[in-house]
Structure formats: structure tokens, C-alpha cells
Image (cartoon, rainbow, N blue to C red):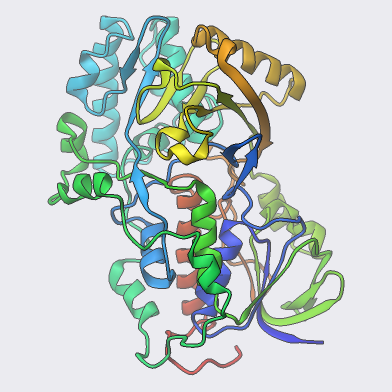
Amino acid sequence: MDKYDVIVVGAGVTGLLSALVLAKHGKKVLILEKSKHVGGNCNSYVVDGFQVDTGAHAITHLIEGPLKRLMESYFDYLPVFEDYGDYFIRTDKRLMKVPSNIKEFVTFDVLPKMDRLVLSQAVTKALTYRTFGMDLSKQSVYEFLPKNLSQDTYDFANTISYFLTGKDMKHTSAQRVLEGSAFLRDSVDPDQLENILKTDDNSSDSNEDDNKDKVLQNLIPFNLHTSLQTRLNKVSHPLTTLGRLATNKVSYSQGYPRKGLKSLLNAILYSLPKTVEIMVENPVRKILVEDGVAKGVIADDIYLADLVIHTGFAKDLPRLIDDLPSSYVKELEGIVQTKSLTIWLGLDTTMEAFNYIGSEIWFKEKPYWAMPISNYDSSLAPEGKQLVGFSFIVDQDKGERSEIKKAYETIYNAIPNIEDHVEMKHEQIIIPEKAAITINGNFADIRTPVRNLYLAGTDTDRRSMGITRAAYSVIEMLRILTTDGNLHRRGEKNSSP
């Protein structure tokens, strides 16, 4: 039996990022993936000539966020990130930019004037509490809202809550809404990360596989597109959180990768050292534990390792390990998940209704979040055509077919005449986050009760969403592995823990 330094369970974006960083710290890594494909929700594929992503995505925190820090420290190449653009609200009559500060919100006439005034006061109050250190994580958005608001205003608040947490305003905390528009510093500060990443100048890999040249042809050099870089260059001295609310002109530093999500996935795969081995269609059936210490896994064979990193659903852990503490199992059972539906429509022309860069929100009836992704890169659709993704939260009390039918009805009602131009339809139902950020929902710790068994993924970190949250968890895992003596600085001699 081969012995590995690390076995990573799961080849989603968290698993691949985990393998990448650990391998570049000198570890021999095996990744085991149960499905045919790697990348999880960070992937793209072609349907009838249109390249769809696995769910609609915006890559956030590109100024100084966790993904940027991982890319700068571990990636060999990075896709070009186009400026994400703006957020819009679609109404029956028009498309209107979502306000980014109190001054803009007061003139946001999608909602009644009186509602806007009292909401502005409520948001200012909540942010003041947050600025002075009060924890609003257990107070719902609904509790914080003034009463006697119009139904449109409640629907608007509900929609914002849905797309930040996957749950309605009664299960979404006021703190989550505040944090959803601001970057919070990592628990690993830049000096600590620099210490972890410190390298020996002679330790870089010089022997690359010949086929990497072929992969490189599908990748874009490490940089940001000029349109996004220009915006980022304007950010010099960030405002305080309270000041930003009133006069915010700071970019949210969001981008969309040219060539779609597969370009980000390709960059990760290209950057993996030769010491990483990937096995697909090989589900882990058991994690081997002896005397409270993880020793490896059972899949199609027995694989041994000094460390096991589980990046699948933390809720699945009791199925893979016998005799976990009952209190820990109960904690994992408290993780809340949601499902999302994305409908991709390939249009036979570029419609005036989608003549923008960014995304739109429809907040009446069945709320959606939509992105015309071929506006970022025309190659994602056949020439002269357009690709738009519409994402919905799935009501799990209703059947999936019923939810899909209602979603199409909503799209066709919100955008008149779109049905006449649809030539491709494609539906995806996925779990966008392994854990939803709700008032009473749990998150798993990266450390487990089993020594040398760690977790990583979007059910171990509450910050941000999607790929950005996965990157947060990987950086946090690096910190904990270093603290536990299981990770050496790059360039240091590696030894088994």
C-alpha cells in the first residue's frame, strides 16, 4: 500500500485548493472524488453550443480577499477577471441600480418613500450597534425591520436575505446582511500568512510535465482585466464601516473570470505539483481511525496517510467514522443546508433587456438572481446570441418539477417576449453552500475530535459566499495545521507529524 502525507476527501474547489497548498508545502497528496468530474460547483460545460457554469457566480473580494491571497501565493496562472459590474433591481417597468449607500437608498423609488426613510434609520442603527461591537448574529432581519412596512419592502428584504443565506428574513441575521456588503479581515493576518508562505528560493519546481504547455494554451496570464484593475486602483484609504454606509464609493472588488468558471478550475489544476494524485469515481467508504488518530481511508482500496482532510459535507462524517462523540454528531446535525435552482437560457439574439454588465434581482413572486454571462465574454454563446443564468432558492417543501415550472413562469412574466427568443434551456439543482448562514444553524470546526483529521469547506467558515468562502476555509486550515505542527513553512524540510 502506498503511503501519502495527506489524503484529501473530495475534489471540489475546496479539496483542490487544499491539495494545492499542501503539496506546495512539500506534501505528497492523494485526492479521492466520488463523481466523474473534479471542481464541484466551480466548473463549466457546454450545452447546445452555450457554455454554462455550475450555478451563476460572482467572485468576490478580489482586492485583498482570501482567494487573491491563495492565487498570489500558490497559483502558477490565473484567469483574467472582468469587472463584475453593478447590481440592478428589475421591476415591471424598468431596471434600476441597487443603492450602495444611504444617500442613494433614500432616492431608491422602487420602494415607498416612507419605507425608505424608516429603513435608512434602521440600517444606520444596526450598523452603529455593529460598529460598537454588539453581536447581531442572533437577531433576525425581520426583528430589526420597522413594522407596518409595505409588502414590496418586506418582499425586497426577503429576497436580499435569500441570496445572502438561502433562508428568509426571519432566519437571516441582521449581522449577515451588514457583513454581506463589507469585507471582514481574516483571522490570519498578512504577517502570519507571510510567515506560513515563506519559501526557499531554491525550492520551486523546475521539472514541469510536457503536457502543461497544452494546458497553458487554455489559460490566461495572471492579471486582472484593465476595466477591473482601473477600479481597484482607485481604492486607496478605505472608509470606516459607518462612513462607507453613508458615502460608499468603494468597489466591492468583484469579478467574473473570462472563459467562465472552468478557467479558474483549469488554473488550479495546472498549478498542482506532480506530487498530487487525483482518483475520480472512487468514493471514500470509511476513514480509518486507530486510538483516536486518523490513519487513512478505505475506498476501492486501503490508502494510508499522516493527515486526512475531509472537504465533503461535514454532516457525512458520522457515516464515515464509528464512535464519534454524540455531542459532536449532534453539532454536525445542526448544520442547515439549502438548495438552489439555476435555469440557463440560450437566446437567439442579444436582448435589450440584458444590455448591462452585472446582475439583476427580481424580488416579486418567486425571487431570482440573474446574470447575462455572455456579456463578459461573447465566446460563451454562439456568435450573435446570448446566455443568461437565473438562480432561485428551492422551496424544499415543494417538488422540484413544481419549482422549475414556477421559475419559468416567473422569468417569462418578468421579461416580456423572452420566451420567443429561447433556443436552449438547461436546469441545475445544487447545494450552493455546504452550510447556510442562519440564526440557529451550526458550522463545523476545522479540527475534529479525531487527531490528524481536519475539515475544510463552506460548512467550516461563515465569511462571504461560494468560492470566496471556500478560500477562507483553506487559509484557516493552513493556520490550524501550522499551529498543530502539521505544516511546515515552504522551503523547510518536511517530516511526518
